[in-house]
Image (cartoon, rainbow, N blue to C red; front, side, top):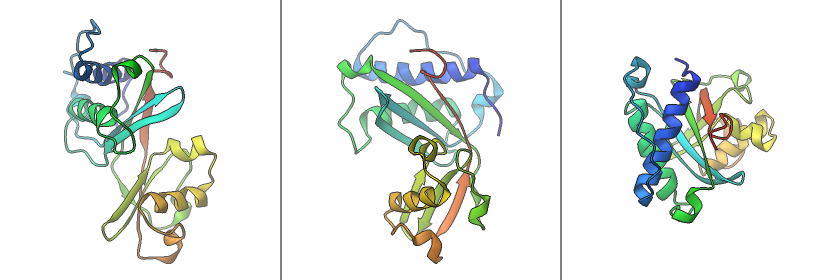
Length: 188
């Protein structure tokens, strides 16, 4: 996976913030960054996560690359802020309090043995039929889960019984992610 340096990460975080601000009619006075570097033309899966005071406020993304990185980040920032079905749309009053986190995903790999899965490095996707659930690599770390608990909760996210991963018939996939946030980079 091509890494993004700090300057490139900051550009993507600014882009996400500008997209949300623009949709709320807030003038930040920040100029949209340019994305001429070759890495930005890559099609990558990515998620944008919003937190307020450490609590989840929205998280939506593409599992696989369908658009270039900046276009994906812009779209997912708006989706996280205004279209996550778990939350009401972000308000102007909440805008100043959000911390934006971006996860840029590696290509997805099939898992043939659960021992290949490393908590903190891997995100997981569980699929059976039309049921599909994904948890990002940072989730089990934030929750203090071991590998089995991570697998169980990924099944729950897919709408499956927690032990479905043990019983077969489930496609398990993993990916890694480059995760960075405004808070981590001292931008808020």
